[in-house]
Length: 115
View 1 (cartoon, rainbow, N blue to C red):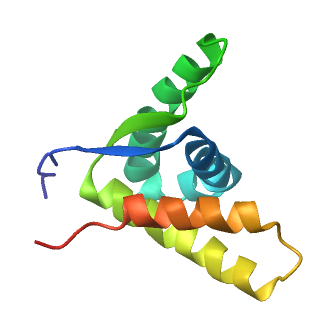
View 2 (cartoon, rainbow, N blue to C red; view 1 turned 30 degrees about the horizontal axis):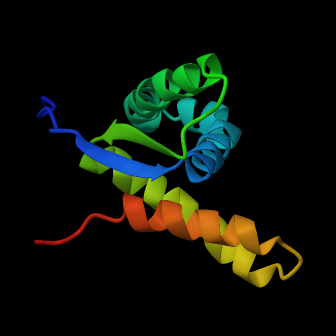
């Protein structure tokens, strides 16, 4: 079965939300990579996130917003992970409100708009 290339979509989000997304992804990276069925997707997501992280590290003052390119499968995978974390956070009332807002932003930009 051959893979059809997906056209990436440009996603724009606040730098803070992007960094939260990267931390969440990084926290599960090793576990996901062990799953042969997910390995290609996880590696492709890492390949999309890492150049932006590297670019931010080179800047003295990070921009307010960042832009990344993700395919629909990448967006769906990340959205499902962020949604699971967000649901856990809703049950845990001692989480800072700012974290909840950043996760909500991630969910907004990762949820595809149906046409």
